[in-house]
Image (cartoon, rainbow, N blue to C red; front, side, top):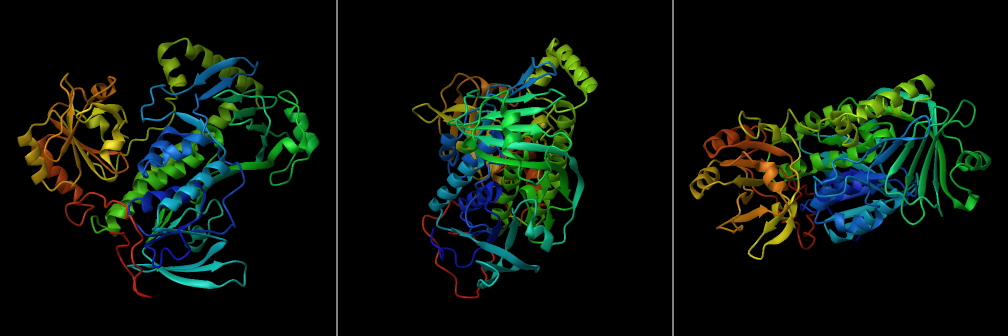
Length: 562
């Protein structure tokens, strides 16, 4: 990955935080030529985000198995334990515990480690160029491209003019892309609610779960990490420390005293800040898009800030790749805002509510909270609601590139397809489902006959990975052009029971687009053509070598390595 490896990038990504780095991997692994620029000289040394969820790990898995490189920096977690006003445990929220998406539910990490790994792994992708100490200074959108100006170094550094197909603004809460597009953030901030965040070394906490201590006298969050790292977050009282000011060490030492002794050398980072609950008024402006903190900011109590950015990248990047390759129309890109905005707003609202309830400084409210939680935990529905975190917003996509039809399977449409482990191949290997589906569209036929498959193939649906799903006790077998899978642990059977004779259409981001009988395949194909230029084809595999550069000044509208 040399400086000149991408002469004419199709996509400019601005910002090399976790969202921008993830987007670079998702696009680069699909053969798209990418230029990733970051105004800072290197990746961040600030341990800001500290939790990666199962959905984010699945997204990294889709980028040529990137999850395997990330696992060594994670603490495969077991959720969050909440304590009441009296210090006694209230509830341990840990999800269903069954790794529904194929990965642990919640996983602490240090953000500098994550950014380092994601940057290092980009060296696998010769069609991705990364330039640090480089700023976006200007952009002008046109119907078929975007003109951008980049400045390397300080204010007197050289300026480079480029023509790209798309710009992804992943450049954080103070987004240059958002400012240049004059897009406002809507919502509210909480300047009077100041929190002190302290990242420590040589810590004795070794729990694999986060801890929220809901004492109204001093709400505290503790999240143990790897190799003696630990995150502490303290709610500040009036006059103790202002947001944006360096906290004095005596204050840090006093706050940590109930939990550990600390020296200045053992404080990796200490910063006071306040929260925001903001959402951009639009996530798309022509050929420019906002992702991550550039698009939305939220309090940290739901642990979804970074994960929401990864979710943005997962939703958008496959669509950009499809359009660049000529397999889809511009209308597909409009679904990014349509699909992501409702969930981003819901997660922001949840984060605010959790802060008000879990981290309240009102003693009467805290006591009422504890009473209601303990009462709910004595009932089966209440216990499941709290321990499985069913209060989280529904991730279902109800409007966009999905086709809900009446009948069995309707409840799957717009949801993330679970990732069970399945039996695959003549040797009956146990394999993660996504590793069989690949990066493109997928068609899963549940007990579908050869004649039915022929009807589906002729309908003009995506040229997708075709998978026969066997739910009985027969061994899976591959047929011409199709892979056979069978249940390995009961989860595949539980997922598709009642759908015999139906086909499940899965998008590249693992969202279920439709569930239908072979007789309705043409109808589904016609609905999809709202977004496609012609029947879609499978995603082009990543190029093994860097494509030859285009002549100087010539714009390549596809930008996909072939």
